[in-house]
Image 1 (cartoon, rainbow, N blue to C red):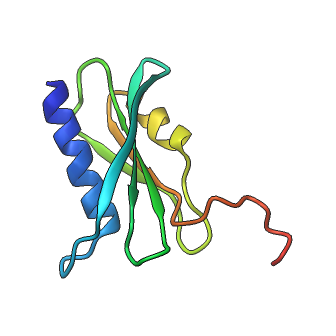
Image 2: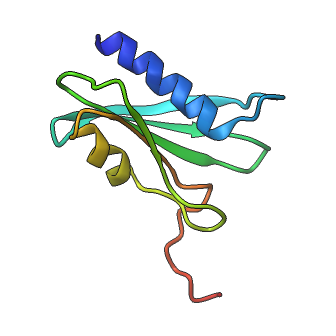
Amino acid sequence: MKNFLISIAAISAAVLISSCKESFPSKVISVETVDGCTLVTSEVYPVPGDTIKVWIGLPEGEWDGRLVGTGGAGFYGGKSSNAIKWAKKGMVGVASNCGHDNEDWTWL
């Protein structure tokens, strides 16, 4: 079951970040246990110099068959805690930082 969920995580990251016309280089950064769930952290490189972080939370218990993608648009991205929140409820949770790690918005 865990291998199946990791496959779902990889598919989720691809759907979240890539378009139907192209795919982007990516790599898994870490796989760790957080709050009883598995958190897969990966990076996607859409263009040279850009990095988008993607977190996939996998439930430790029974997967309920649902996938939840979180985050906003533009400058608002998700966090790893968003993915874990849903994984703790039995779903696969996916979040992305939309390419922005900075939480200082004073320049706006």
